[in-house]
Image 1: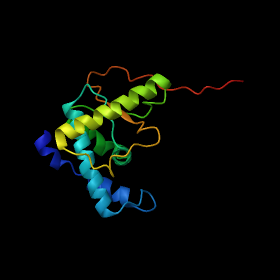
Image 2: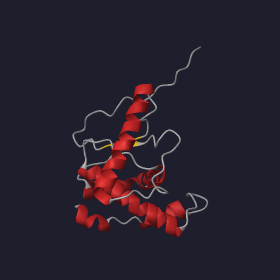
Image 3: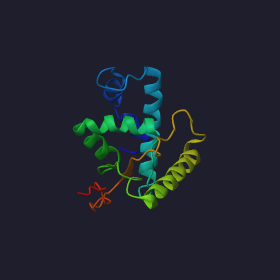
Image 4: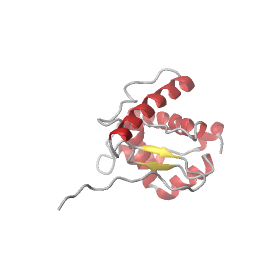
Length: 156
């Protein structure tokens, strides 16, 4: 699959799950459609910038989580669109002050990439979470190890 066939990506099952009031987020159809469209743009940015930590908005990240939960579909969609598995790294910004600053910089860079490619950001859909969205992604097509994961700081 290439960018022109991104429309072949069937996001309806994910939309149904996200809209579910009990097992999803209870989003309206209109809001879900808008977020799904922004998710597609996020995927395009990830594909076009494989060596950049493209950071999703909070809503796009929520949608991405639901896509990932359908593991078989997510794996197939990644293979068809990217040619590799698009990894999710939920610890970006949580591993100390420097990591938090790197996340903020990546968030700003992601907004610049978005606006250069798609125009003005819909600010109501591209809000950061309290920590900025702390979910980044790594294309990882070469199979190298993911970034260091955080550890609990437990003192006895």
